[in-house]
Image (tube, rainbow over all chains, first blue to last red; front, side, top):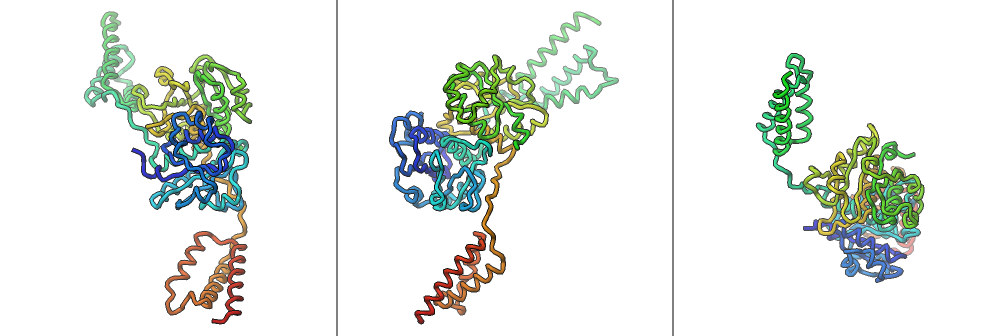
Length: 245
Length: 245
């Protein structure tokens, strides 16, 4: 059940040179649940390289809009983010990607939004950048900011997905949790065994049980684990019973 | 000036099949300022495909440690995160990537940390996953979670960089901001011109100036922009003066 916000986000690739990058970008989009791709004057499209790199995301390519101008790609959008690899005087304030993603997702209540990526070699022109309502950048390593186009789309769409649906992980079905009384019985058993072993002296307890309780409560014991630990304790008890000190 | 935390993060790739993926992962790492790569039993390495895909990040490949076991790759680490594409019963709680990145960066004060990625086809085995202190996942599209290896490394290293140094964008040198008195003079001029145009009636002001003030204060006027707007107003004044109503 995709979040409605994700259905209102367009990814716009402007004058992409390599068809492979279009395919890899489509794959990156779909991994984050985005399917609306617009291509402004792509050099080669459709193309076998695009299809090959799209892996299972070919339907994103098949539904892609190919247009002649950035204005057509942005038609009807209420917010558009020009992605730029560098700060630009003419862009005014360049937003950090995470901020831009949050604003874009918030704006989807009013209509479509677009994230716009320029060419592999030189990005967007200043003229293209100024047709967008915002500019944003991926704050990469300043000494090597060389993300390829699909990698930039991957990071941007990841942030859009995080802003739209969050990063919660469905909890795997856990093994049955131990109950309070099972755990207390375990501690009582452990205490007795440690005493028999001569490791625990009630006269000088040295906070041993406190440490053990802390350790096991951090891990959250399961029913089966309590059984295993009690089995170990019982085995120690047997050995101690056979070899009286 | 890289953040010290980034220098303490190892990326570990286990039994990678395609050398190209190792190269693309190295490039992804370096874009986020990470340089410490460990390869556990790579199928083909070194390899021309790795070098080609690494682009300018070949020194990350050259300095990569190639080891026989995951334990060697994790030696000396104080925290290790197994990346998994699915929730797993044996992993216990699988953390969202953003949480895992925050914990890992926090742990760098105590020593090295590692992010561990399995094979392209099947990820990490349960046995490998259990040798790590934590497990984490990229919460992707549940219907198409197919990030390729380098894309997963790109997203994970992006989150690590964000956790370590944040996503602040260095502000581009802005044009000079307009002063309060320049802006007030502009509004006064605009008011006079709009009156001359018959667009503004002091008897029925309709909150016109309030709306204009709101619009311009949102954009934060620059000195030069005030000059341009006053030039436009002066031109209108000229025309109005020539064509008396």
